[in-house]
Amino acid sequence: MFKNLIIYRLGEGWTASLEQVEAALDKARYVECGASQEKSTGWIEPRGEAHGPLVESVGGQWILKFMIEVKAVPGSVLNRKAKERATQIEQTTGRKPGKKEIKEIKEEVKHTLLPMAFSKQGSVLVWIDPNARLMLIDASSQGRADEVVTALVKELEGFAVALVDTQISPVAAMADWLTTQEPPAGFNIDQECELKASDESKAVVRYARHPLDNDEVKQHIAQGKLPTKLALTWDDRVSFMLTEGMQVKKVSFQDVVFEGKSADDGGFDADVAIATGELVQLLPDLILALGGEAVRPSLAPMGEAPVAASVAPALGADDDEGPPF
Image (cartoon, rainbow, N blue to C red):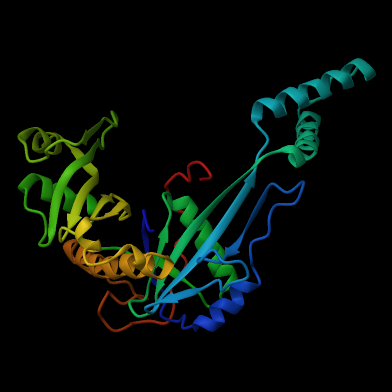
């Protein structure tokens, strides 16, 4: 549970109750794609029990789950069938279809083939911490997270979020930690990182399962290659990859987290309690290590009083969305 985290600050003007969120999401439950439907999205039961609640509260932490289904016709099949149709038109009428007509033919062919296309499904976990006023989306790309945020903004009245921003950029902080070999208190530098040149060369150096406390890494940074990813471990309990965009990826809980817990402690509630219990402590330490949360006119930093009533949605990030799942 929770392999990747994109961190948002909730707008102070949004104060919906658990029951209000449940009622709103119930109107947008996921329904499978129809025969000729390319895509379907909606909310499903986080616990996996049919007709169950769409918002689960475990220890005061709210868990939601967003389903995305996509049906796609392979491009090679679409082009071949469209070409066959165009050839048939030319042989029948003696007229070669133009670009506009070819486009229309492709749409018709796709509509015909969609009922036979296989669908791909993927789900995205959403964690809302009402007390800390944070929302975390378990997505590997900003594009996927934006899709979830758009759905929430559409379905929840007054809902708004903004990506958490820090006083020190992750790139600057990671460069300092690697150069000085002095990670922030409570954190250890692990053996994986990515360094990328900011000049025209766009050169990239990646280290995996390799010690980073060496002159070679420092020299790369001195020459202008900046860290875009760095593996860290917090309190010997949670390992993760910090990215230049303040995303937390490859989250892994160490064995010590599970000490004293038997196999009978498994299940949805236990998984949520363990994951959120660790991460709710890690996140403030990570933000503090990056100089604290940047002050916004409409946001309050973590641990301080709110300063405004609303926040604009943070959409349209530069990250590529990547494959559907």
